[in-house]
Each structure stands twice: as structure tokens, then as C-alpha cells.
Image (tube, rainbow, N blue to C red; front, side, top):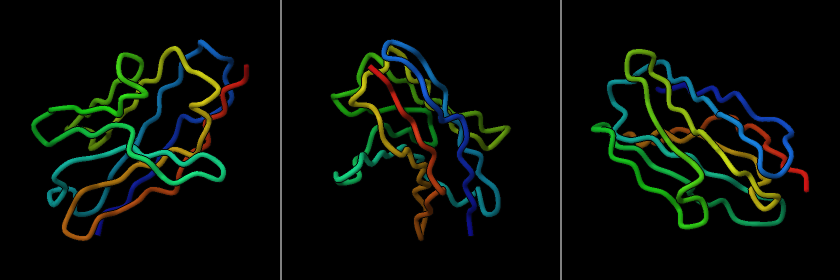
Length: 114
């Protein structure tokens, strides 16, 4: 079992920045890669960024150049640095651990005002 706890969401003006954190505990050795997803109201959940155990990152086209995913293996924590935020980035952001079972965090709300 893996437990994930996100933090760092909030309300920010367009053009601002936020950093999300996702702390993992439990069977962290079983985690292959980590992802951030988001789900806007009335829309499907979509992947935002992925980072492998080796540190290779991939991003959705909509956030490339603005968001950065990183991980601190010593702290079992993954981060999502979000810069130049836009109102369309407003969503609940979820952390996901790619493991044998797959595990979700509880989500954290990000609201970007225009």
C-alpha cells in the first residue's frame, strides 16, 4: 500500500505561481513513476506531468514551458512547480503513484483568477 498526501493548492491570480507537493509513504519502494493529473469542473481527468524513477519528465502540451515536475527521493516527495498560471489551469490536482496497484492522492484545489 502507498499513501499519498498532496498540499500546496490555493487561489492565485493569472500569471502567478504555485508549488504542489505530494508526499508518499508506505511501500514507496514499489513506485515506478509519479504523475500529476488534474480535473476541471465538468471535464475528464487529464495527465499533466510524469516523472520516472530515473528523473525523466514528460509534460502535457498545455503546460510545457510553464510547469516543472521534480522529485526528492530522500523525502519520498514529488513536486509540481506551476508558473505563469492561467485561468484554464483551474482544477483539482491529483498525485498518482504508478505501482502494481496504482494509488491516488486526495487532490488539492488550484484556482487561478483572471
